[in-house]
Length: 439
Ligand code: UDP
Image (cartoon, rainbow, N blue to C red; front, top):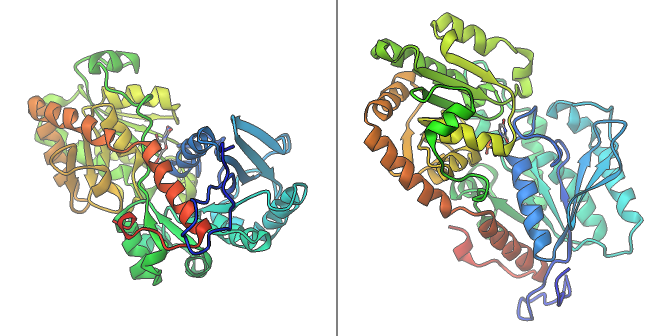
């Protein structure tokens, strides 16, 4: 709790003392902050919610995270960290449900959230923060019922995804597009991860720019630290002379791990002396529609003649991941669409440069020519050329790695929480937010 809590809802003209939130309801319908990131639908948004909730609580703002229960044995509430409670709400059948199906279970989820809150004193929550459109739809009803503001983070946008689909990918459904359109109008304030996302909200959804604030996500600089590459290679079971090209994340077409594999095959054609030393590691679990094609990437590796160089690794804990980043020559993020790209910043914080597609938040996460290289498009030859240079010009690669540490140091979760608290205070006070926040 804050030492001197303000009066949420007061100072409507923004002239009074800052209005401090004391307790917020965070909605994360489709994926739980307790899930291992890199598994199923759990990814950057989970990491974001966990890191932000912990730090908000440390600053005296209690956080309840409402998520859908996926198992019979789950307790109704779990204390994730001091001041952070995860509340499991029954809605639909237990077990994982794909996001399209989840849209049909919104009503019972909303009912569960309202029923949970009804056990508290009126005015328990000062504000609702929805993450992803499904949560926003639930959050909008809860916020209206409780008479508090709704702050919404979309994380990804259907209209943006639909203009940058990978080959064979299925467009996002119309129900999501309509849901996001509605949410842009009903939320009191929208939080974008990057200036690019803020501009997309305005361009594709006609959002009012005065109600959009950019707050970049961060990186845990205690976990993701530089370290010895040779020791890390040994730690993950590779020889010290290996050249490791790393992919980390949910394995799905949109993130294009196949582009990395094709690039590795081109690289070996270009420089056969690397055969036996070049390793491609894909760390993460199958996600979304890709779960239906579990053998797609291993079959691709075989058809490219690089099966012996490819390691498909299960999702790893964050501490374990740090060893992979430190061991890598480069982390490759060839996504077709990426709302921010936490993986890129984690790699940089570990001193490993990133080779990424110039899409979405990646130009923010990666400083082109400084902490890595951004590539236009998804031609494997372009990736192979840059990766080959990183292998054959280690001094250049190392200078990028050193600068990467500095770049990542500018992106802390603490700064994210500063930005979010600014949004919460401004929204509670009903005052327009500083234009400077909309970079
Ligand atoms: N991640 C993880 N273990 C894994 C794979 C991924 O902890 O095995 C984490 C990764 O460290 C990152 C997040 O999942 O923090 C993925 O976030 P990103 O923004 O890169 O992608 P998103 O999932 O949001 O599309």
